[in-house]
Length: 400
Image (cartoon, rainbow, N blue to C red):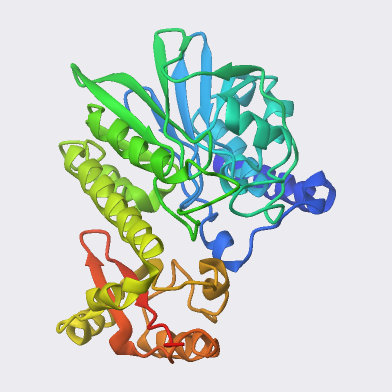
């Protein structure tokens, strides 16, 4: 009966948000974004850290006897899910005293204004992201005004190394810019099963189509990314968490945890280092390609992959999902424009060579810049154990 009442409340609150929320004038999640915003059952991760977010856009509740800390809001449409999840776990949203965020993009900060109103909590964030939050996401160096949300004002500006203390919890803010100018990763200690563990909440280290060289809107972007990787690699990490569930295999780990898997699957220092290694490699590849556009053919050589067909066959047979699509060798066409040509083959979908082939045909319409893209212009990577696929699509520039 309690669960039925909670879901009824969630349904009513969601209808209210859709019909009356001021977010209607701001950016709305597209099909790909909505796939990252599906409801999931909340659960205790470890110690006093609880998961209250959606299927991929994350939100974490850190519980103390003196009140709670909430990290990230997801989209504004995620707020009813978060409220329902907090209540389902036996806590009260009104007991949230501090709001913090990973970075000021609309899929992580879009609901902060609503959560601040609902809780009365103090919002604490980095100076650079505080400016973007106050502007409601407008003027973003990478996306302009495309992903706007309800503006929200920070109550406290955090510097690198600043701490937030509530009850017996101390959280440390580590500035890890690049993904946004004020992107912040968080660390804390958690006690569980008689042991202490170092927890890292990674802001983000991905490079979603950014200009890394001669970026007039963010001149230090490449240096900031490089520093961010050095900082994160220096942090001790037992428990790896992040702003997207796909970064730390949320879905698989939560299922293993529910099955009683020991040790706790979220204790994953190796996964943390692998994530940093993979995303730093991606950053360096993109930086090198942009720094030496005349050597783009050398970049395409990375896509010479003899085992490509067998990997795609395995991904299709085992129903892997598409985790990430990256583009290598573009010079003038933005990555986001190429993503728009992916047809209905979105990140999060079951891998399909038929959909992939259709998407490549659509991409090949940009004949003024590139040669038609074929399957042999791909590099495929299968990720175990979360059964996901990463694709790198290599573009061969036309010789002028």
